[in-house]
Image (cartoon, rainbow, N blue to C red; front, side, top):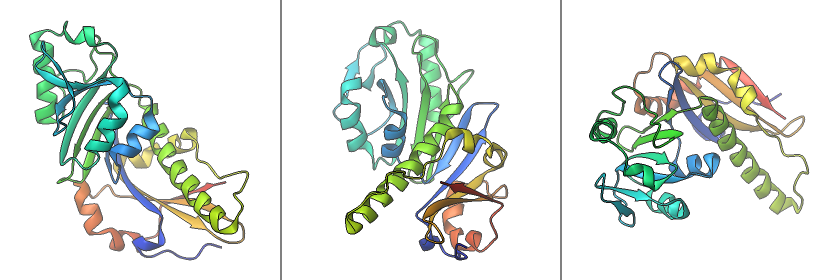
Length: 248
């Protein structure tokens, strides 16, 4: 039986998730741009609505910077520690030049208000996401064209952490397990009711009787601001988890 975990240090990773399935966005806290990019690759061109990136290309029609798809990796590396970031992906640069003044105004409204006037998805851009992050607020708000991508994102983030952990253990033991535990998006989808109210997902490694992993889920419906979660983290973890996902 796994030992009773009471402090943040006993876990490998924590992520706060609050889903709005009607408006198709998810608020995360604890998610990094590098994690998002690795989990959702390949990302196509990115239209930068709020940023401090200095190496972007410039679109004359919109008067906005953008990142060509072949430079996305460079952008992610340079922007990983951005204080505030907002971008929308798009498929074809030629389509930027077809955006109407109203559509351009809607994009600027999103970057300012963190929400769309009508829809966050533009036919001309064919965007899958609108991504906004604030270091001050300790939050990332992402609109998903396909909400199932949010389950894939979280599953990929956890799986990457598990794989990294297993590789580090294998390095010292000179052997890596052939079957590394993994989490599927379908399993996470079964726990969406927690995400819709706001939940903390906490990953840890179980040593005995067999090495595996678990994710404790705690309902945080009383929290309105993600940054408060981290201030109260150890207090939150003293409460018994509401659900436990075993990853085998």
